[in-house]
Image (tube, rainbow, N blue to C red; front, side, top):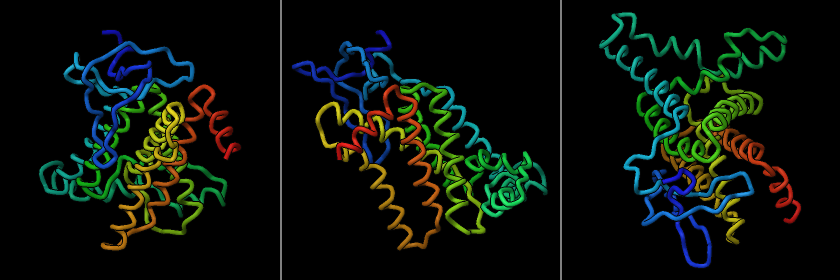
Length: 275
């Protein structure tokens, strides 16, 4: 079956509707009952569609899979070293060494800005921190969310644009975190750029809801739910201020998606002026 007919629901009257992606479990979209031809889009976005039934596994974009492999590969390596299963006695300190070398530091960023010196090893921290995690659980959850959101965004914008959103959202999140906070704690983990992919997903859903005449604010339910959960866990178990980086990543991803889609900025500005 042609690629441009994959997974779109066909309903009476020529209305094109997607099936709903679960915002609670971040699952891959549910398969539809039958495929039908897709009308060409003039807005630069592929329809919000699901994989068709002819393919048992809808392939994940290679660049997204590569990011996942690197994240889990780094975590598995340092975890094995921490448990004495690889690298010998010195491997116990692999995680600490990775944090010292590759975590983003707001203090180091402030030093670079003040001195106007930008050593490559410190600039690298802007894009290396998403690959260093505090523990295996954090890396696994971030990796699963990366696969789900990266697959969705990559299928509709292309792998290179999905990668650009991931990288640029990571940079934006780190810079905002350094500027707004005075935290001496390092910023680590893939969640800020993953929130960038959530921002891109939100923009595409926002556009789709506008086309179908539905309330566009519904597109923000996922980020609202995630922020509410962060607040709840912060109250119950104590939290940190890394949510600032998550929000910054989300905003960056939303804006980047609008920039990557033809007419996206005009559509967004027109909506803001209308309201």
